[in-house]
Length: 150
Image (cartoon, rainbow, N blue to C red; front, side, top):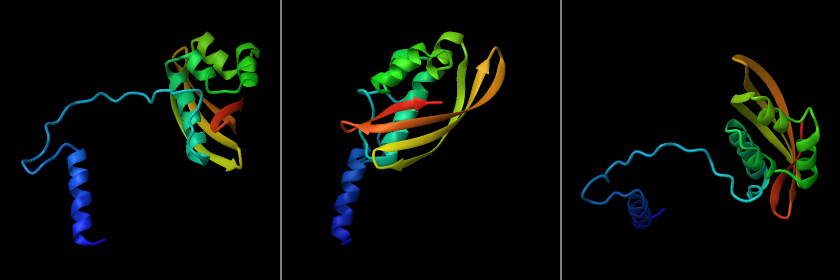
């Protein structure tokens, strides 16, 4: 990259970071926040979008926010999660089990379908319980939707 182009890029970068020739911009403390669930599901392509949908579900599960959790799935899945007595969503929201930590593995994507595995630790009456979760997702209308959670 020519030096002039590099200088222009660096100037734009520093300006975007709030710096100028007079020194650094003042530091403002910002509390970290959970990613917001925007719309029914992330629109990014491939594994990035599928992973973002799983992450959004897990962030909502930590609160727990049943509406946000369910909004990430297909209508068929939502019905199942609201009524099936072994459903993760129902169990997390209704039983008082709290999601403490999670680690997302994958997802593996094949066309418009994806599968992600999650290792989760739940607090159940003060006891840590490890649990594996498998998310099946499908890309419909440009968004990733949860179709199965087991």
